[in-house]
Length: 184
Image 1 (cartoon, one colour):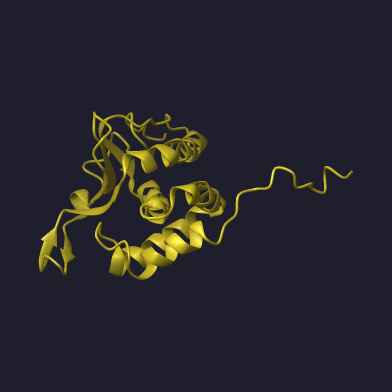
Image 2: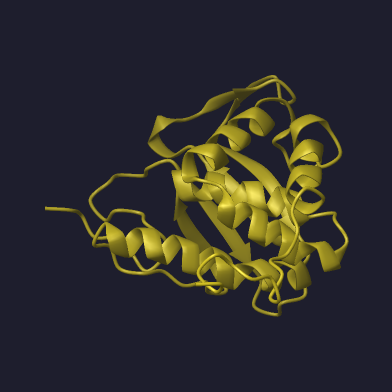
């Protein structure tokens, strides 16, 4: 029997303080949306900047307007996966939203891509992110989190590569493009 998650995204009720991500959404909708990785009972991890162990790391801050662009595609992608595993769907609420650690890693990849890009490139980033398999998103997260995974590292290393790769390398689908099935 599968454990049922809470109202958020995929955190099983029977796990004691699992590693997860927290998305903090302000009630006013004017403050930055903050994404935090919480190591839970498996932590703390050694942080070279702090020169000691930490229980949480702030992974990014996103402007509320940008968050509104990606909140629905993220929710839909996560809920589709949760439903396939017989979990209840989640929803974004003001305050702290807990997210399963693997879904949180995937979310960070998309948020890192859009946090500093031109707003008109956000749909292309969503399209490119949707085209990636979960394992590819986890790999990108792992590469970026190693050296440039904190909130202030947006213009370094793999974070910069993720932004360019998802916003510049992808185009929106052409609605006028015919497919093989259209020609049959």
